[in-house]
Image (cartoon, rainbow, N blue to C red; front, side, top):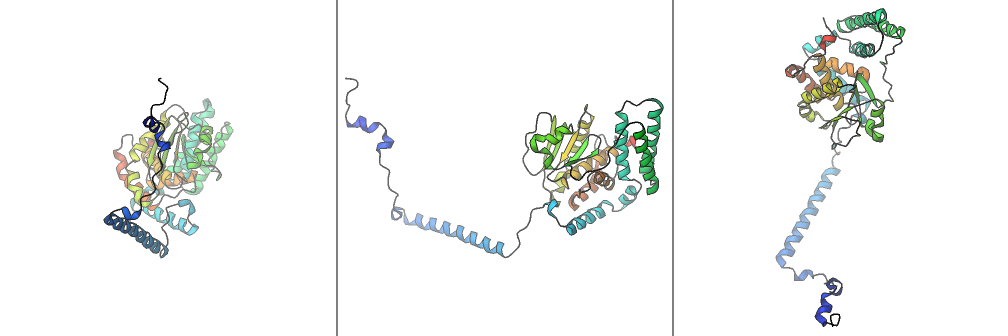
Length: 334
């Protein structure tokens, strides 16, 4: 009799949820009067707050987030002039005047090309002599005609040896080469599974963005993620990370076949600022020279005035960071 009928109590215990009728909503009148009054007051306060906010917003223009790539030509010109004025204040102007940043960048790229080649003997010596002349002209306040002549002679010597150096900067490129093993650009280069970075043999990435850190492909051996907005009041926090940025980039470039890509959203303000901090520290040059060198590779850069001030302050602090001016020996300025 184990499977027989066990009475109505057993039936009620089977599928209780499906057999129990749903309770109708509790009438509002059954709630305590005090609670009804409190709830109504809370709702009224929320509605009043929203109405006041809408009225306030309708009477003024909504503040736009900083988007450097959306600025008008007049805004861009004004921002560049303001930043340039900061970069060239005081003794910085004299320090920057003796260096042709564009020619200096060409020297770095040409020297790297020669060192990576298999050319030997007299031909190599002739190319090196031409490069030494270019370095001297770029760093010793030579007149423009002399510097340009030295640049053309160096490129000709390289070409005669079967070597080519690309110093141009195609505008359609999503990233540009600032120095050997150091690239700069925007977020776009990380699209399509970082195909652009793979093509350029990038091994390390510095991301200076307001978004969370993303996972990169396995061929990226190191990733430094710095949370930063593109605004003047974010400059100090970014400046506090300059030593870390310099150490990361330098260590990556010193690895076998190490190539670093530094990026922000558009590659216009934050990433160029971080890259400039490294160029300054590595070669012991002022901020104005670093920015001009980077602009020779990527003409669209324009760090905001807050970042420009932070780079000027970095001129005084970078001496205390281990490894300062470790690349200055290749310049032999003076």
